[in-house]
Length: 161
Image 1 (cartoon, helix red, strand yellow):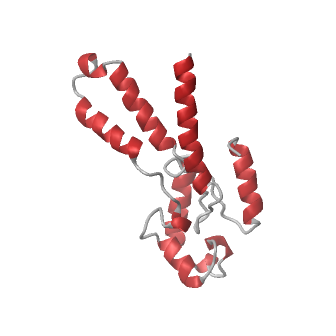
Image 2 (tube, rainbow, N blue to C red):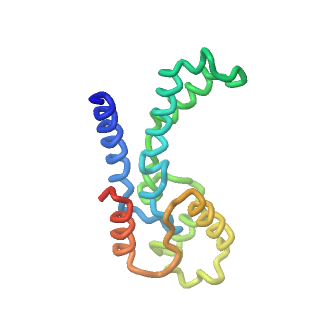
Image 3 (cartoon, helix red, strand yellow):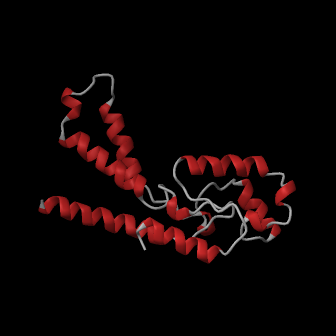
């Protein structure tokens, strides 16, 4: 029991650090970085836990032979040790993001504040991105409104305040 608590604290510390880095970031497109598993540290922790579990169970020795366990464990180790995304406001995310480039060019803090939102040349891209984010459980602000209040609510909802 003591080991699981220690491991849990280490996981929580790592996730907390990553989450704290992105919790107040609302990307130009409206995606909340705090709800992103790559940015909030969840991917790192889960990859590490999966690799440890596969190794601890010795699955390589008795599991399905169709799996290349060495490559799988190597990939999980890479994911476990990668730096969590910093969020696009701090230089992370997709460096070729059309929404970011357009918002920066127009000087708006988020796409839904743009006067051209209805005729946006990137509307299809934004819609695709937002729907994909929502499918994986991310929070997305797609209407005008108080950014700080929205973030405060989402942070509170997350239980990680």
